[in-house]
Image 1 (cartoon, rainbow, N blue to C red):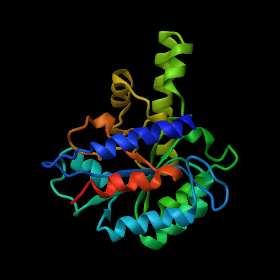
Image 2 (cartoon, rainbow, N blue to C red):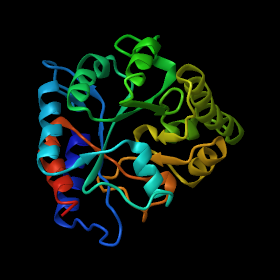
Image 3 (tube, rainbow, N blue to C red):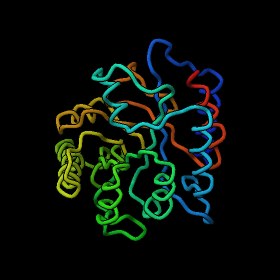
Image 4 (cartoon, helix red, strand yellow):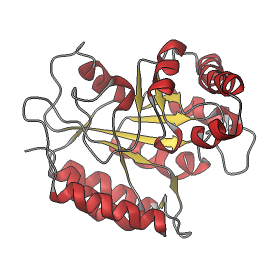
Length: 254
C-alpha cells in the first residue's frame, strides 16, 4: 500500500506540473506486467481493462509503433515518427502474457516488446516457456529484449557483496541474459529494462560495455531525446492508478 500511495503522489505531482518538450517528439512508453481476469494485484491487470486501455489510446489518435522505431528516433537515426506515437512493453515474462495479452494485441495488431529475465523462463511456475516466446516472436508483433538474468535488486546486492563480487555479479546479470536471449531467440539483444527501475552511472556504464544501446526505467514521463540513452522513462500501468496515468499520457501529445 505504501508503494501504491507513493506512486499516487508522484502521479499527482507529474500531472499537475507536467511539462513536455515542444521541440522534440514525446513518446509515451507504457509498461504492463501480469494479467488475470479475476485475481487482483497491484501490477495485475484484467484482460478486459487492458484491451480497453489500448482502445482508449487508439481512439485518441495514438499510433502504436515498435519500440525499435522509437529507439531509432531517440538515437537520431530516424527523423520522423507517426503522429502521436506510443509504445507497448511488458516486463518479466509471466505466462499470462501468452494467455491473455497475446490474443488481444494480435487482434488489434499492436507491436509489443517483452523484457524478459531468462532465469525463470521454462523453469518457474506461471512463467513463459521458450516455445511460447518463440511462437509470439514469429508473429512479427513481439520483440524480445533483456530484463537482466534474474531480476536482481542492485541496491540490495551492492550492500551485501564486496566491491569486486558486486562488479562480477552485475556483469553476469547483464551479459548472461543477453547471450541466452540471443541464443534462444536468434536475434541481437540491444535493449534493457532496469529491474525495479534501479540504475546509476556505474550500472549504465556497465550496460553500455555489455553491448546495450538503450535502457528503460520507470519515470512517468514521455521518452524523448532530452533523456540519456540508459535512462529513458516508461509509464508503469498499475491497476488502481491506471486512470490517473492515462490522463498524463493523453495530455502528452496535442
